[in-house]
Image 1 (cartoon, rainbow, N blue to C red):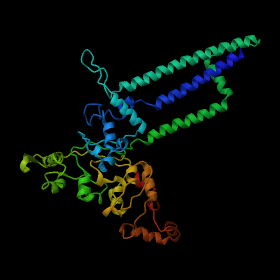
Image 2 (cartoon, rainbow, N blue to C red):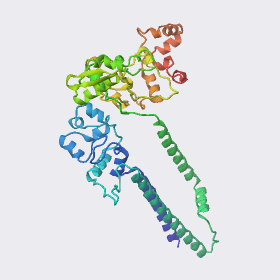
Image 3 (cartoon, rainbow, N blue to C red):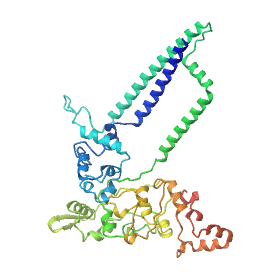
Length: 446
């Protein structure tokens, strides 16, 4: 009887272990359809063109061309900037594609689902039975998970009941007093008998949950590789890259104001009053026509690029890519004019961008500046872009350029009056931002 009891106990533990492993496996392992719905369906359809093109057959097409579709999915901008033929051939109705945080195996699963996809069978009323990109699939997955969990719970309760009855029978056979116990009292009794193990498991579980919650909170407001849709398809690559227009020609308040500023229509028209056609063809020319329209000019003769002034001006409603919280103070003038920080340190390889966007630490740290930009100093950081930790890390690594910098003359003179402080600050021959108060809370929060 005791053997049956202990064998039943072992079986219950094994089933519990299998259930936990299955639960974690189900949570983290997803099929191609789920991955497609989560990462791709907002812009793509397997066969139809939407914001982005239909994806069926794309994997084989890239493979035959000898291009790396995995690199494209993870960092499309880098592939586009590198001139990869398959990337340049992709046409989007709006903007471009954001990089997706998926592994090669997940990309394989996504394309396996896409290539096997078949149009849903229409119902009697003509509506689709299932739609790509809906939330119903995700909800049904969790429903199945809940059903499996409840079934496993029923099995565990049944095993516990069987084990308890065997324990009672064994006690009666041995002539021991039989004491009825509920599941709750038995669980509590087991926990008290194994208090150390329960304490350790409880501590580990608490740490895991707290760490998971913190990881979610740390990502609030972090928008790396954000590419918003703009009313005009402005390309930094053509303006700042090919034509070498200085950043501050358009963002003319960056050196003297808290805000870098967005160029007015008049600033755009300084050049585009003469430049009415784009080297990129009809699409670029159509975008230039939008600038003229905003300035009050209507295209009346496309063949002769003739515009007529209507007087009906309208603002260009650009969409902000960077947006700091209201409780954070940041001054472009302090960093550009005083700190002599290069624009690329925060905005990445702007001269390669075909659309307005935010950068990422990966893009900034991998920049290779050549030509006139080769002497620019790029500070390599590890924290997420534009987070508090990122700013503090930069202030810890960035050197203050005190030479020929009138802003720091008075501070430098006062510093020399305290020889010990001067010695400690200048011990390594450099002055970090944090040594001039760059780590004081009130510098950024007020």
